[in-house]
Length: 198
Image 1 (cartoon, rainbow, N blue to C red):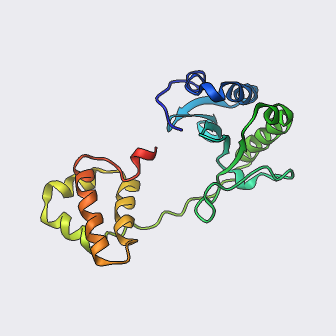
Image 2: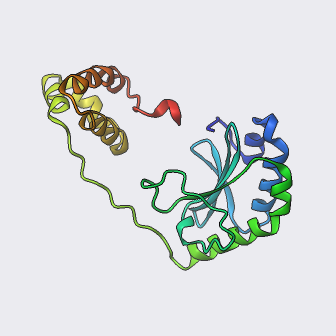
Image 3: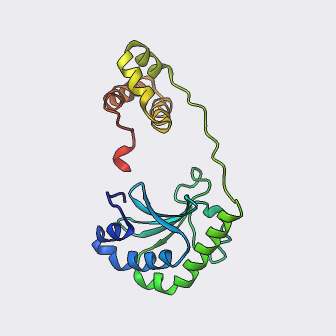
């Protein structure tokens, strides 16, 4: 869950119900050579500025993220792909109680050390960026409104891609048009399609 914080310590204080679990995980992370940062509102730990691992609290569990987790041996089968078929490299390890974190603390530290070593060894999934394809409905709306076109062009590539795919993925013409009506005010206000979930 994303919150406005400047440190892992501040992040932990936002989650009263998970405070003990988060502190236990943070202690393991802090014992590594990784540097603590906050990215996307969660604690992320880096080596030479490169994301290696992080953790986050959710409603029903706490998750440790390994940004290149696909390369971890995972002999104990602890890791899951949060978005099967979508996520190529990221893997997470979920906990819902303090006892399991304490029981697996040595194993967590070993996974973190392996993740650090994998980074040093250059193991990384290269993300293949798809070309941005603007659907005709959006293209038409943008060509008729110069202000809308400027606002759209000022958005990040990922936001522009989200809007384009949102319309393209609709099967029916009526759905495409209703989706277009929904996103025009968002584009005008520089709001990404999925910003409310971030």
